[in-house]
Length: 156
Image (cartoon, rainbow, N blue to C red; front, side):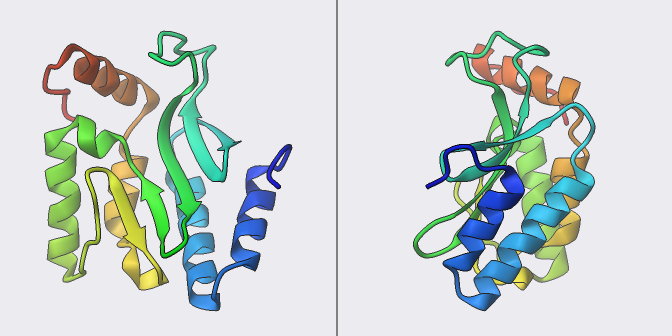
């Protein structure tokens, strides 16, 4: 049951049901995002995910009337997932992220904007730091607006 949970409490709940390596990886990802995400994003809980979003007070023009989610962290049945919507809104950001993994010699298990990992080594800290930490709220909003228009988003 996640109703009313804080993000930290949700992470504790999710980790309690995971194998030790997956729990360690989930906690490491949570700590990393919290450490590098720029000011202006709001940490919260949405369903069974910890999210970092643009508050509605800052940007109310979302397609679903919900805060604009920039990053989300979840534990699924078979893996942990770090959702990075910017990567599917910006071809440049996506290419840089994939290149950082390749340059680090790490195997990237990724969908369009969702990085799957089961161990701490499954996430490349430098790539995540650049993608998350290098995206100020205004840049994320600009990328979102460009994606909604069908235009290539500005570099983030």
